[in-house]
Length: 92
Length: 252
Image 1 (spheres, rainbow over the protein chains, first blue to last red):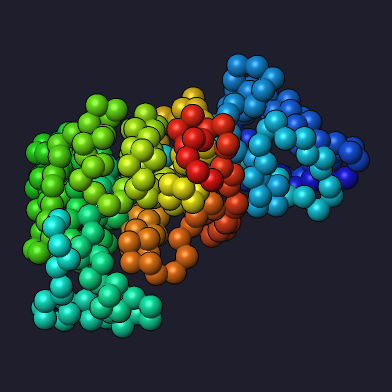
Image 2: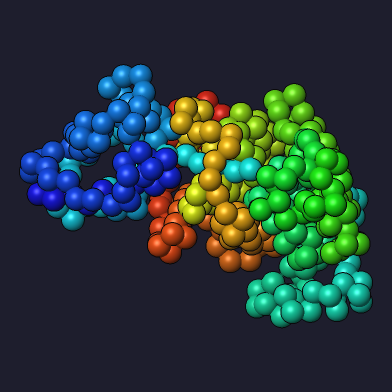
């Protein structure tokens, strides 16, 4: 199944694009998708998403179709899902 | 501010067009006149928030911002002017705000918010608009927002993107629910246009007006994200963390 993934802010900069489709197996989880994204895009994105370990950095937010999902919530993806990965921004 | 100061005839004339807004009226204007707001800092975001709130007739602004005006401030920090280069930013901000609204009470603090000064500064206001560049400043304001039960409007920008949400203690989560840890990727200096900070600054000022006057529906439990590069706007539901170390002990 194809899952639409959207990136924001520094995640978007590291990914080099704002939106793409990811091919995932039926029954895949959100965690599997995010790890696959980090592997596919290489070190610059991986260092933002997973700087220290296999756990997503707590400051990175995940949304499925405009609803926030926490990293430790088990979520199975469905074909209509749009996943947004957000990195925090600030001001000045 | 002691007591509730009624509107004067001059104020009714100045704010006539917004008093016409349904569900706002003279009662809403009176609430703004008797309200106080902290804006920290008064840079790209905070300048515009302060200017819009001054224009709207807020009674008192507390503005906190250290340092002197630099050339690189001038593309977005609209309260800073070329003739004030090398002089304190809060002085430039105060001068410009007073030109716009001489009735406005301003407390200008030439410091950035920190864990050391946040309690006493937040204690002077009814509402906080967080326009700080660094997350430790934001967390210091957030902690006092929760402890003193004062609404906190969070606005942020990067490149052509912006984020906005409104935290109201007891009714929403807080900044530490949203971002439990200081983001390692965030840098003090970053690409941005003044028109981006101006856009989200106006929206944050509108949120402040709504919360203070009871108008409309503030962005509670939602994060507005937009990208002016392609004009996409998203409103995402955000969660309150029950185990949040800052607001987790408050009644849900």
